[in-house]
Image (cartoon, rainbow, N blue to C red; front, side, top):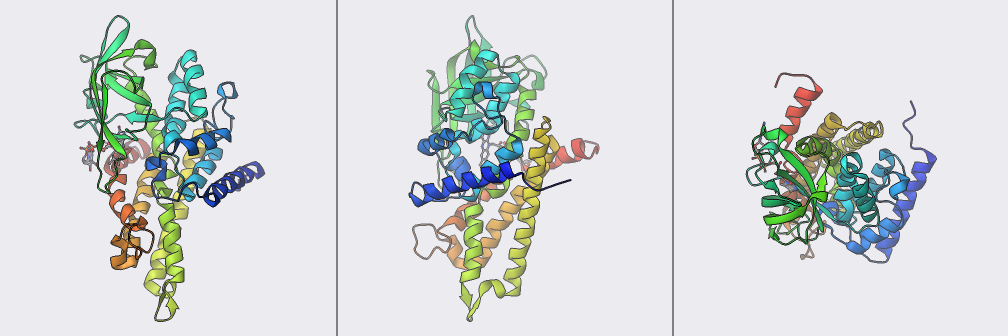
Length: 389
Ligand SMILES: Cc1cc2nc3c(=O)[nH]c(=O)nc-3n(C[C@H](O)[C@H](O)[C@H](O)COP(=O)(O)OP(=O)(O)OC[C@H]3O[C@@H](n4cnc5c(N)ncnc54)[C@H](O)[C@@H]3O)c2cc1C
């Protein structure tokens, strides 16, 4: 078996790199950690769309390029390597478009996929509620069928990009009498409908990248239902495999990793580069081995997607692995930077431009978002290894 990338893939990677280098040279943005989820920059998304890198795997008839998921991973890997502000299109490109393709009507595909591909549709994930996180099937947001619409009321929490999104992929209970997994429906809801309000949440890092979203008797047209009614839980399980199995679970903090490598190479202690100290060398070597192992796991998940199978087990494995790498990276950075690690970007003494403290704080949430590590380990144990639940 040949594990090398094809020449077409190498070409794609170098095109993406040149584009990102050019963007940086023009000073359009600065590399940031978590920019895939917190970097909302409609102009950047438009420029990415013009190059045809959104909806890369989708059929040509909707404007896609029919490229492989491995090709898509090459694009996202480079976006993450450069810490590019790709949050506007990330969710729609990663999982919502796929859900529309699999479950949507022809009319919905023709309406939404070109919008996503043009970089004009920013979709948030309306799954979690205050009392329904790991046990998503217990969600309470209700959607009551009326003559020509569904009347939706409830609250979603932790909605990524809640202040920016123009659509929300909403899961709501349409059959309160059915067993809890069997009464949930998926909706794609425009955020400008009357009765929807957004309240930013300030997270541990001080950013407002997430929102609580409230639905107060929102009249949602029936054409917003994605797929069969009451089958939403099965959609979400599949979508989560795409959500978990991406390079962002490993490389969300790559700008910190790159700066840390530079820091240990360039900083001198007793006249010698820090990297020559055995402990520092060991820590950095361990990180690099884990990073490369994580990359392989991500490519494996993409290869499974290319076989047109949801990568449920592969994504659970790579997410648990990638998340722990990112947490270790943040901890190692704080250890190596000592007291300077805690300084934010506003301090001239912040050795990694304040990225270390951001990652250290933000990484606490990585093992919760998109499914906690404990829950993912349960999936690996029961569905992957066949152990009793
Ligand atoms: C930064 C961040 C971004 C997020 N973005 C979004 C978003 O965009 N959209 C969205 O819908 N949601 C989002 N979430 C919510 C996320 O999906 C939930 O936080 C997650 O599913 C866990 O749910 P919970 O917070 O209610 O914790 P709980 O489900 O209450 O879990 C609490 C603890 O109990 C453990 N636990 C629970 N059940 C089990 C079990 N069966 N076995 C073993 N241990 C268990 C968990 O591992 C965890 O440690 C985000 C969360 C974070 C932190």
